[in-house]
Image (cartoon, rainbow, N blue to C red):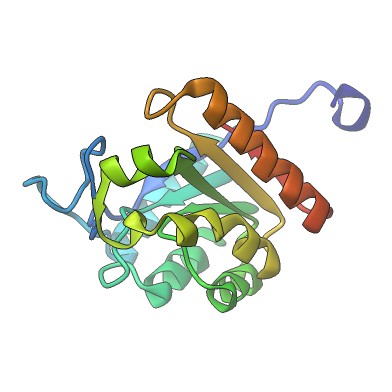
Length: 193
């Protein structure tokens, strides 16, 4: 890394623009059955928050939402990206999984990267903690990195939550998916968490 980029550190700031969620995941405080105060930032609030973050010297933003397709549809995400372009040269998303065409629209709008956790690769454990909602669809979530790459996204962060299943098996499965992604989408940059 030092040979190609010098002694640099890349920092990003996460910014939640909504905490609405339509899935029920037992480990998450945002899940749809949890009675918490919900919010969805307006365009004006997004400008205010992003201006503040950019004012701190941060150049990379990770825009996050809960997983609610109805509250944070593609149109809302595109609006957030349009606002973020005023403040940041690099924009990534950690939102609900989408279709290839939606990722393409976001890429053309200025999105550089996405973050998506499979959470666990053990199907039985996955089903036991993802009780309802779109996130309960293991295969749809598993295919998210490939759909994003097909849509033009150039940076994909993948990950697991340690402790939902056997850690060694989850790490091996994450590495296996990464190898498949590298083979099928060699121009994409990957990171793991």
